[in-house]
Image (cartoon, rainbow, N blue to C red; front, side):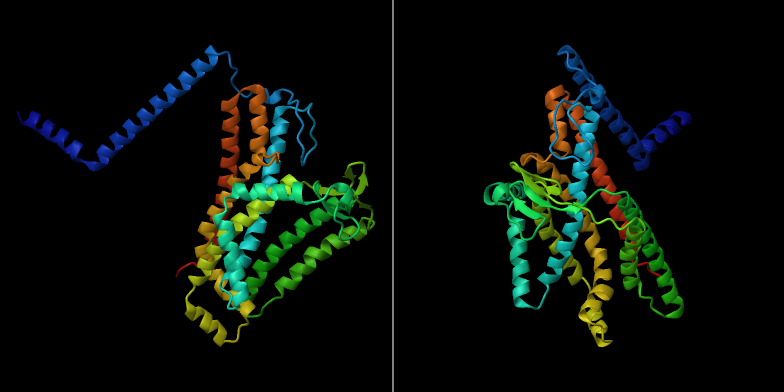
Length: 393
């Protein structure tokens, strides 16, 4: 009898133990999720098989049979779908990378200008922020696309501020150096200079902590980033040949062309997102205690030194988390490129879906690509956030 009572009490105590109950609930939730996933996947596969729709990613090895207007790598309609999607991936990566850099620069400038004591600068920054925040980004993309195609002249009447630079409804066309092997070595020299700058900054910081003597890191870095590529250029024969655009027929040949689609997408993304970044920067700067500013001014720091050495390092703790969100928004908003004809990953994948009929695989690839972009950006910003965090004693 006592044995039965003990067993009943153990059962009751088990159900009243929140830790044990939570384990059962999680197991039950996992089983339910697995059942729903199995049902949806099996039902989808059965429907696809019944309608004789091919599944899998075998289509990636088939001929794409469509052209892409802009490509960072060599591509033709005879290439496979896998290479076509690679072109779209690189196009999205390009506009996102350049857009993030320009957005951070413009947003920081506007955020500082928003707090300026100069009435005109303050009001201009405020007006910009209010204007671009309140207009949907898709409308802004349409506006810039129409601006390039409707308001700019034809190639024969292109605007040319100086020789070698043309602006028309075919885009911005300008001269670039003629291809030469030395430019690869110049790029390597720039990479080496960046690595040396990073190591030099760490060494200078340790040196200053130990001796109190400051090292001219900024001017040394400028000398490295300009000097090493220049030396490489001289050693490589100092080539000066240029590929200058020339009007032939109805378009320009030679030089580099920034298409209206790319320019419209980049302008729309940067101008729209920078308005939000400006408010993030303004809030971060205002979060710094006024006593810090007063103390810096008391020891004679100039306004530029005050901003770079005192305010921004502390404000970054507040700025970085919401800034990360805005970077992710810019990357995801780049998918709107399909509305103005820029061949980003969504546009290329959409064409592949229309030709092959494999919508599930195409949409899955789009989701994976943007997930990679988002996770990579978040990982980098989280690393930078930890690096900039103030370590408490």
